[in-house]
Amino acid sequence: MSDLSLHPATQAFLQRAHKMLIGDQWCDAQSGQTMALHNPATGDVLTQVPAGDAQDVERAVRMARATFDDSEWSRMRPRERQNLMLKLADLMERDGQLLAEIECMNNGKSAHIARIMDVQLCIDYIRYMAGWATKIHGLTVSPSLPLMPDAQFHGYVSREAVGVVGAIVAWNFPLLLACWKLAPALATGCTMVIKPADETPLSAMKLGELMLEAGFPAGVFNVVTGSGAVAGAALSAHPLVDKLTFTGSTEIGKLIGKAAMDNMTRVTLELGGKSPTIVLEDANLETAAAGAANAIFFNHGQVCCAGSRLYVHRKHFDRVIADISGIANSMKLGSGLDASVDMGPLVSAKQQARVFRYIEMGQEMGATIACGGEQFGPGYFVQPTVITDVDQACPLVQEEIFGPVLVAQPFDDIDEVIRMANDSPFGLGASIWSNDLGKVHRMIPRIKSGSVWVNCHSALDPSLPFGGYKMSGVGREMGQDAIEHYTELKSVLINL
Ligand code: NAD
Ligand code: MN
Image 1 (cartoon, rainbow, N blue to C red):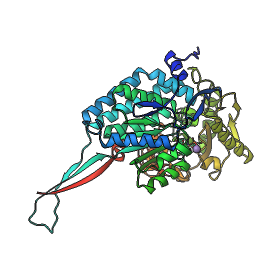
Image 2 (cartoon, rainbow, N blue to C red):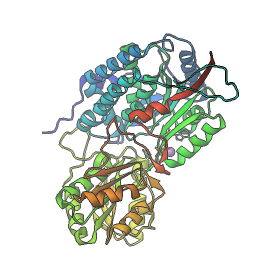
Image 3 (cartoon, protein in one colour):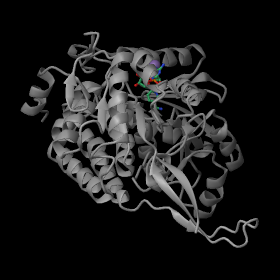
Image 4 (cartoon, rainbow, N blue to C red):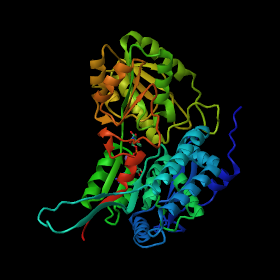
């Protein structure tokens, strides 16, 4: 049975006035401007949020700067940072349903799945990174310095928090992307200003509330809402920001990278993808078809590492396409509040229109729509779609669509499929479906992507660094490597 009612706490949250967080103050944009958010399942206006601009970014960055440079936070010991992070994770667990329903109402995704995936991954990652707070260390060295033969030295390398972090994130996993940036920032002792996606700022605002309730000092976490071109651009160009961390399109990632270099700001970019799902001749076809369907349709295809290109051994191509089409045709579309629904709407009318432009382009180019391809409203829905009879050069194969659209091609041998898999400007993820361990192991080093999954896809864990080769980005999130991206090295040499 479907239950479309919101938790009373979510109703109360949505009805109140939404403000930005600077220090411990909830404020409107200094200009007084607001922007409307929409419920993707209906297209109705959900609420208004402040439309921050450079003045608001200025205040937030100065607050984060002062808090980093000299405050209770900058003097805090690792154990205390760890304990605050564990407290935050507990509060997120307490408010898990509320956070999931905020994601559902603002992004369109399933509240049920957001609770067990998005929100749970946030909690798990914050706890994982809380453990790192007490385990950040440098090393000691024994310098030789031949020109000073009589001197004795003590040399060491320490790891210091990078400083003020400017985070700019996309709308596909609003809370999770925020936490991927926040958790290592807190573990290392940084402060942060986050500019959530224009479309989906609400969960970052709730996160700000929980940060204060957990007892983080004012100014550690600041939230400026507003458009990317205004608030995002101001944050990425701010000289008092020490590190920028971004998740979004490759196009905007390049702009942010260039802005960062003007100030030599450290920068991590998690960008687009066009990740291949490769089904080898020996694969368990049932598992592979279900896995390939999930790889593209999870989160309605709005996943940076979605398996959006499918390559199936020619012998099994028709069978696997029929299986995936069967799964797609049986998926129930509807509101993310309905736990019986398999797929919700896309995030915005703009994203829906973008996806249909690609589907129409495919039709014009003579591709076959094996299933789906239709839209319905009033919300921003796109049917799960599988497209065949495309070639490698087709824009549908080369460009990130970022919706529930799979393009599929057959292959005849391993060399050919590796060539096709790597024939992409992106290199975020890839999955191989096979039980032939030798064959799989020989393929893995030849795949140019930051993650390779075997008999699974988009499977992320706090212990495994995640990020892209090629146009999919710079740097890694999660794992021990994340700590490196939020710290600077200091070499110390003491002449004893
Ligand atoms: P985007 O890259 O424009 O937006 C991501 C974030 O960057 C948002 O917070 C946005 O406000 C901000 N931003 C936008 N312009 C900016 C600027 N000039 N300076 C600083 N910040 C700026 O993504 P989008 O417009 O929401 O989506 C467009 C396409 O990007 C999608 O269709 C999809 O293909 C791709 N995308 C990819 C991912 C991913 O994780 N790979 C995520 C979102 C979107
Ligand atoms: Mn954009």
